[in-house]
Length: 95
Image 1 (cartoon, rainbow, N blue to C red):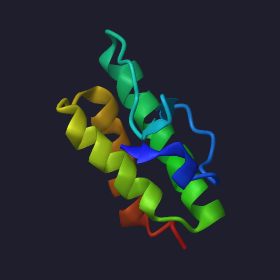
Image 2: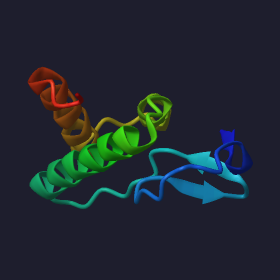
Image 3: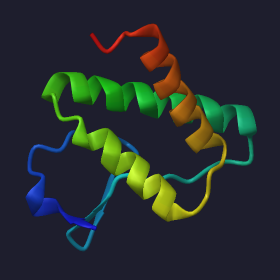
C-alpha cells in the first residue's frame, strides 16, 4: 500500500479509500446488478481519466489497475472500467 502522506495531491475519487494511512486505489463494492456495475466501472474510468488530464499524473491509472489485480476479482465493475479505458484509447480522446 502507498502511504496517504506520499500523495497529498491525490484527487477525491469515489473508488479510492484511505484506511490507517494506506491508500487503496480500487475499493469498490459491487451490487448484484451486472449492468449497473459495468456502468459504474465505466463512470469510474471517466473520472480517473479526467483526474489524469487535470493533474498529468498517469501513475494514477497504474495504481488503480494494480489494486484491481491485487484484489483478485475481475467482475462487472472492473470490466466496465477497463472497457472504458480501451474505448478512450481507441478513440484517441486523451489528447
